[in-house]
Length: 110
Image (cartoon, rainbow, N blue to C red; front, side):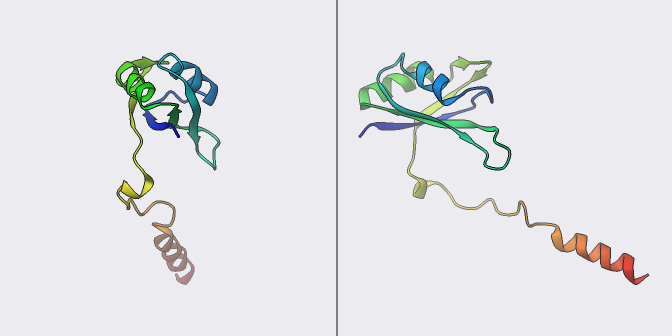
C-alpha cells in the first residue's frame, strides 16, 4: 500500500487526471482524486494523491508543497487518518430555521 498525501489550495479547474500527471513527476502515482461538492458538482479545492512508495511521497512533498500550480500555491503533506481530525464546526444548514418560522408566525398574527 502506498502513502496518501493531502493536496490543498487547488484551483477549481484541476481534475483527477491533471493531479495524477502533475504528481507523476515526483514518482509513481497509484491514485489521484480531487474532492467535489456533492450538491454543486464543483471542486472543493483539495484532494488526495496516493504515491506508490514512501520515497515518492517524500519527493512529492519536497517538490510540490508551497509551489504554484494553475495560479495557486499548493499545500502538500501526508494525509492524516479521518479519526485524527478534530470534530465540530456545527451550524450550517439547520441554523436560523426557527427564527424564520417565528417571523412568519408573527406576521400572520397581526
